[in-house]
Length: 285
Image (cartoon, rainbow, N blue to C red; front, side, top):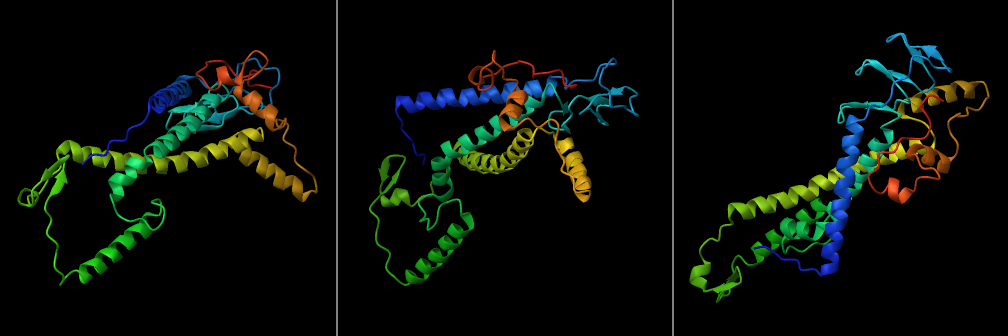
């Protein structure tokens, strides 16, 4: 049997708007991250640290060569196989916003569908701990089931005068027949359980990835620079010197530079809603 959850018009409108807002941001940022060129250094660069030995071109600061793309990428973070594209200066914001909104969407789907999942997965079983602790509840159910079976093995089973199926009271003779779920019911049941378990697992993985990149952004560095700066920090520490990241301008300014927010751009319009604005600067200096 299906359980119908009835809600008022306010929550129906909220879920309709909120879910489509998340979906629009997820699709937009993924598309832009995958199809926006990360940025390549021009041939005439005033500030050149070195020459790339692989593509024989000027290599400005924070530029690194991608062996997959076969070219140098401005402010390269990493090559993402899920995007089939490098994450660099011009699409780094799209990548992070996709990860964040995707994580937000999985958390929203898990929370919104939790009651339905609990009903389909556990039914009317007694839960001694919150349903997230699945093994404990399963062990408790097996233990109590065995105890009840041993207790009632030699007892007299009370006679049932009727069973309610699909809002109809069937007599005992009709209720003795096996009630089989339709293929649609089985599919819905499996889809609800799969949706919750999949969204919960992905939410944990994406949450850790989002925290990692948010930490890097707050410190004004990329994934590649994280390893380079750690080596330089360890090298200077042996000489009793302190390493200073020249691209770390403080947490607030680092985020403004990364998100491309200035006096002509607002957080609500250009971050909470899809926007194609470019980041501040040129990716060279």
